[in-house]
Length: 202
Image (cartoon, rainbow, N blue to C red; front, top):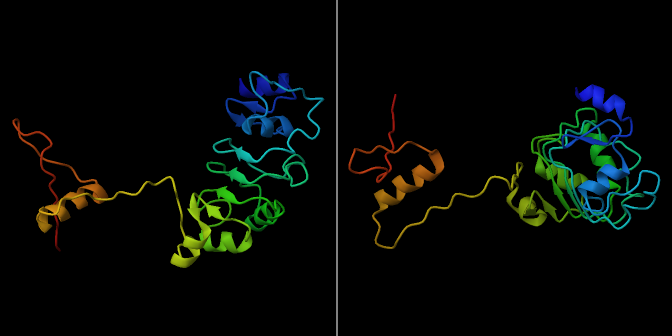
């Protein structure tokens, strides 16, 4: 069905939220909020349409290659935020992708899977793209200072909370529940009241 539709509409750029092999200016404009229901755009009148684009969310678009004449610093000179999460990009090498992104001199914030198409080291990505001030929502300076190699802002921090009078043992048990996601045991009268953690020694 998918192939039949794409073959029947040869200029189709997005199908079921995924980019087709024909993606170009219109697809980028749609993801960047330039084109939409109120402004569908026209295939023959998209010249310079992306010049004012500053933010582009391409997450989970099933993109296999970024090398496209529309994805360039010439077409999008003002691009400052780019989200590439959830795309395999397996047709491009790490070095080629980093070289391509380096051409976007205004790019300051980047979201990408780590490990992923740009490699498995956040520090190496920042070294290759020195203009970045944020990587996956974290300040570049903090990443470099901490020497972190894997950064993922999608994983929200689990910060334990306790009161001043709470015993240390209770603090540890409650914190273990947050980090280890262990099961809680309860009887018929007291459901989900106390977190229980078991340690096994061999």
